[in-house]
Image (cartoon, helix red, strand yellow):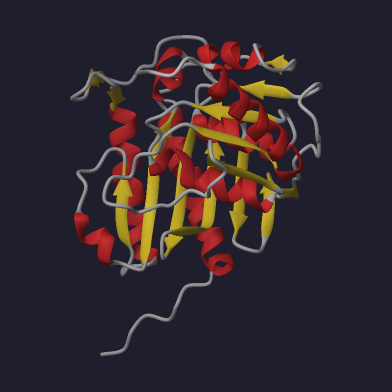
Length: 275
């Protein structure tokens, strides 16, 4: 029996991007700009919302991506986890609609996200925002693009002029240590990271409990654009672990990372310690 040749991310990218665009079109059929979605909606265990569009996109991508790389395992927000992924070199990581609440409310800030992991690290990433007509793509070592044009982070080195997005409580806490320009929360975490990648904003904070599917594709886009997303201690993210959940994270261009980490360190040190 012959094995499938090792995939080259650049060779796979056009087909993955095309699949994401087609999947985005499926979601757009039920999206209503500025109004409640036409999709059926319900709550999952734990209370988070899901729509028929999430399930439809997930099913479509599962079939399409499996055809591109049959030996790759699967990890998605809307599919029951199969631990066989832990023993596989390649894993597709998918969020069919990142920013479901935004999608449901008619906000354009939602995206279809696909990453391919190789030994736990993303080597291909697509973040497609259909309502915003923007598609971010990246391959490991191949750079990052938005609608086909190369992108880079802003290159800021200090927080004083930085535009930072994130949950309001985190921004308010950081503001006690540093001056910066807080921007409105971006509902899709993937779009928060990709907008750092293209220089629209300079940094972002991420509250605990983000999952692999929220992060992997956008992590690669940001890295290839000259940025990084790390733990609050500056460590790179690990993917395809038994529990694919992350703690508090920070993201920025690499030139701003040290200043952001220092500010967060001072914030932690200023908080009272629990006995």
